[in-house]
Image (cartoon, rainbow, N blue to C red; front, side):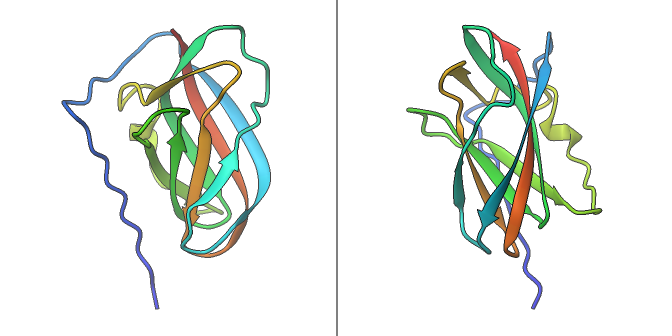
Length: 135
């Protein structure tokens, strides 16, 4: 049996790409990723951010199995996300990077969003690239 994933991106208006000083932070970790289940992961930032608020303006996620991911901001209802590329299979996810889909959400340097990953087969690690702009 072959499974397919469908992710739907909803918006309350036209997507407005953003540009500016975009920095990418990479977060990698071992994690138990259960098949066909949203698995919540608390993110530990790989470096300290200067005091302030940050906008996430893109993201890319890799894992050892294909799937979809979403970010959950504290006190925020919407959960932006995208496709996960896996192993040696590299999908073109540039549309979800570098401000192409506008501002996804904001957070302060102390309270990053949580990550949720849903893979088609049980996995054991992830790598997340967050494109950030200080606001």
